[in-house]
Amino acid sequence: LDLRGKFGGMLTAKITNGATGPTVQATIQVLAAVNDSSTPAAGGEGSNWKLIYEIGGGTDANAVTRIRGMPIYGFQHVHARVTGNTGQAVTCEAYMTEFSSVSSA
Image (cartoon, rainbow, N blue to C red; front, side, top):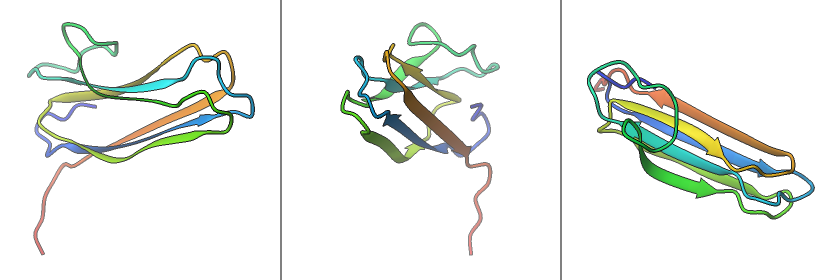
């Protein structure tokens, strides 16, 4: 998500394990980049992206793990990625919203 010229954003994410728990947990990583150019190609932590938050879904059957309304600010670019070869069905979701304006009442 390109946040240049924005006021930040909000991240909501969820990991839902299937009826058979995964052998390896799925992990959602939130990464940020601070540069003034275009958004870097998606990827893991390295020269462009820095890990700012990570949460794992565990290995219990039917477990639900959530990130609820995590504010994101102070970065030009943010992306979420899922890692982990779970070996079983796991549903992973991530939604990011940018704040593009501020108004007062």
